[in-house]
Image (cartoon, rainbow, N blue to C red):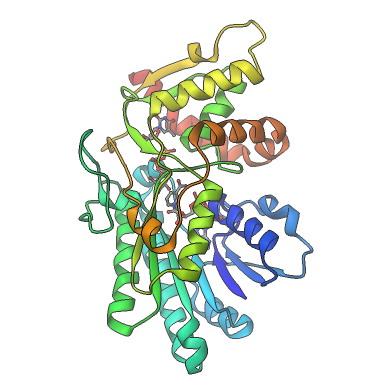
Length: 357
Ligand code: NAD
Ligand code: DAU
């Protein structure tokens, strides 16, 4: 069996659903169920005998040791993290706790477990650490895309915490020979993304006729990766990646934020026009920029294509339409995750920005 952490979040749940749809191998999901973790994301596999769930913290050494001893996984895929840049600006210590200390605690227990395995099981064991392209910092408009050897230059508390976790994972391999691999991927989008992130927030607000808050000039560039493509890349890294290596994963879909928002607006104009007929783009509102906002991320994915024969399969225009259709068809899900605490976050994050714009 494999152990997945953070499997109730956006990417983790896509990975779990895909895994259990494709493989007979059981899976244990360790998730703390923070504001970002929703057991409903995995409703489709509740009751499946291959699916096991434990609510808990990756940094809880006793719990992790017990789970490893009981379930004896052949691999760990570590998704668990605090993941939202704006929240990291508001509360950086939470990011240090989970992304740095939590990952370190998980590594410690995984190392002890791996060392006690017999030779065959130890040779087959893998620890895949899911990280981000944000650790590389920001690119000029015409600069070459991030390769795996690009220097680490994290700019936000979030990316600094992920960079720290990457360094520990790397050190575990270098010092102890621990069979770890790191992936650095670009912005994911798709079903079940919490509506604090750009794409689901814009869909959520547009459907309610609320302002679409674009930070600064909206010319920041991200490389959008459909979440199922990310999961297939992680499977390739888990099964065929070389131990001790890092792999960049991207969507080959660089877009400015304004391009993304306008695409969402035109798809919604077609699928769910406003009652009064006005285009959704009229809701766009430029607000105060994010502090330290990275201008551009772009991924050079030649290594994963050459070594593991992986490339993204979903074009942005196809993926964004499928994503918007999913949100339109799953209003109950949106309702269930946009509770009081979500509303408090939105109030706190956007009230001041709009006034200052
Ligand atoms: P998410 O915020 O949607 O989900 C995170 C999950 O981790 C939640 O289920 C949460 O309950 C769980 N969690 C948080 N702290 C935990 C802890 N201490 N112990 C156990 N579980 C805990 O995140 P996501 O967008 O699905 O991202 C998953 C991973 O991918 C993260 O490591 C993130 O840094 C990385 N990543 C995300 C993106 C993206 O675009 N979303 C891009 C690159 C990398
Ligand atoms: O690049 C990978 C990273 O992508 C992941 O590591 C992070 O976990 C993930 O959250 C994401 O980070 P970003 O900061 O790029 O994603 P976010 O959706 O928050 O913002 C995308 C862009 O949109 C960014 O330039 C900020 C901008 N934005 C975002 C929000 C929420 C807005 O203009 N308005 C908004 O309201």
